Image (tube, rainbow, N blue to C red; front, side, top):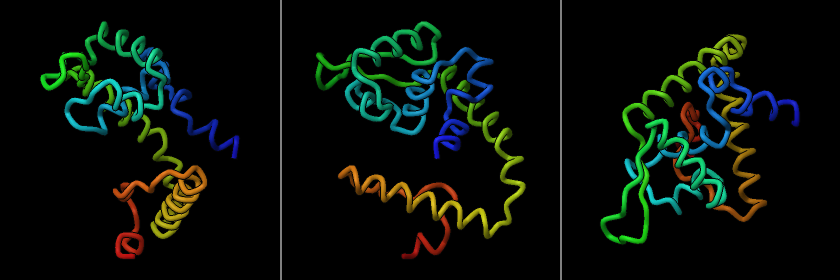
Length: 152
């Protein structure tokens, strides 16, 4: 388990090293790309898994790179909102694309049926981990989830 975790950990993706993107920066970019157009800093901390003080530092660095923009929340002037800029969106897309290409050779070794079984097992594993931690399951099916799972 440790070996697999280490291999698929985003911090080891060559594209992150090429673009000088830290794991924390990737987590923030990924969370923003996967969420609504703007999110509050408190929500971003939860989505990215970063502590508020680290998140502030990371957001500032990404803002300096012009990959995201902070603004004051129109409903609560004390709160800050964050959104990806077009440059940030392009950056995370490139990261996703290059990571997909890198992993595609791995998937080439799987049959279509094996691929779907693997995804089913990963989803079951994730649900089990969430259950043991007292977290609720994510109601959105994972990309590539099998038809069997979607109809159950």
